[in-house]
Amino acid sequence: MTVTDEALHQHHAPPAPAAGDPAGDAGPRDGADAAAERVVEALARDLDTGFEALYEAYRGAVFSTALRLSGRWAEAEDLSAEAFLRAYRALCGYGPDRIAGLRPRAWLLTILTNVWRNSLRTAARRPQPGPPIEDAPDPPDPGEGVEDAAARHETGRELAGLLAALPHAQRAAVVLRHVTDLPVAEISAVMGVPEGTVKSHISRGLARLRGLRAEQHRHLDQRGGTR
Image (cartoon, helix red, strand yellow):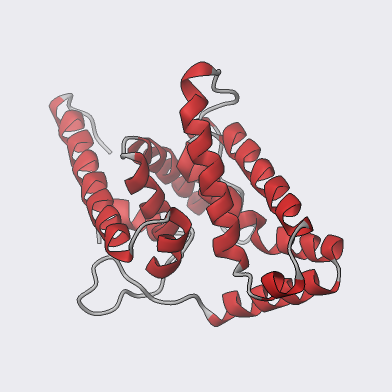
């Protein structure tokens, strides 16, 4: 596994891919299923209380995804807030059957991805607020030591720049698979493309990341830089 792959797996390690499937298509963990069941049950009982449960269960996944998609801390906050606002408005119009069939994580990330795509269409016409991701640390893990936190921050800076260089579809597919830990079937639903296309985006995106990182190292070597 390359350092780029390690960076993608470091804090959001996906299940081991099935044999012969380089993109991986393992299903969500049992804990994820249990969380979804709790959220759906809470939403069925009371919308406001259920929405609080939805927010608490998935705010981390939504923000992490938004951060890697956008590459900017403040923009990720805006994207996350807009996604949850749209989710609440949508839930106000959902009946019991539709709530019962909800897959909360994939549903929220579909909303987030659509919000992000919309932001890309208008990005050239509005300023980019807030510091870039390389100037803002990832949310701290209270259980990790200072050395690990520093290493994670440095990895985040490098990874942010590499992801930003990917085509949008490849970036979304790689982030959803290797940061947010969605299986390919759910990414297909989120992105609205066939599973084969998702696997292609993931494979090409990872290959492009490795190539970009190798190019960075060549430039460092030419300048006499060291890691």
